[in-house]
Amino acid sequence: MKKVNLSRETYYSPEANLRYMSVSQFKSFVPAYGGCEARAMAILRGEYEEPDKTVFDEGHFLHAWNEGKLDEFKANNPHLYSTRGPTAGQLKANFQHCEWMIEVLEADPLVMRALAGQKEVIMTAELFGVEWKIMIDSYQPEVGIFTDLKALREIDGKWWNKEAQAYENFIDHYGYHIQMAVYAEVEKRVTGRENWLIPHMVIVTKQDPPDHEIIYFDYDAIEAGLQIVQNHIDRVVAVKSGEEPPMRCERCDYCRKTKRIKRIKHYAELSVY
Image (cartoon, rainbow, N blue to C red):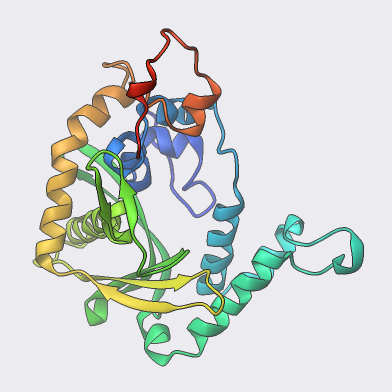
């Protein structure tokens, strides 16, 4: 497959996503993390786009701040601003709230220490026979850590996993331990270091007022995350490469949009959860 020169401009490009595996792409194939093989392949092929990109814009807003490029981001994204009524010319309400979230982070010295260092560091390495790409939000190898910045609706909530039929915390539900594990292993292979750096996450919530927390992951968590990848990677690669047909989940936005009923259900088949 054609090599892609990764940069901050090309990292999320269709070409880069076809050439490399990423943690978000991996999870998009795995049902336990809300993935759907049919949806993942439709996105990779350019046949389907995310229906609502507001949450991604909010994430990019926070990451632009962390990178020190928030003013540039605002200037390049006029859709962040209201264009009508008494609020014309002002940031839309959700992005005003993002600025409040940023104020909360800036007021906490330990958060700013965790988010110090090199920004948006791109690395690639082969794991489990597949070439992966990662982008580290804040990289401090000299102190033995790296940090990922995340915005969530809340920290102490619970999320239902239909596959497991159980409630989970946000780390397990969104597979953030997998992300931290892959990032730690890729960084270790790229640098040739003997031990992993300690992954950290800075979490800020969309609540009013925002909550925030710093979370770290130990070596046991890294090993467990890598084991999950190893358990699923063969299937993911087989589907992505076209060796196996993708399965539909029949629950996601893509499956709902493309659904064709093949049989009529009995009412007792309806799921409670």
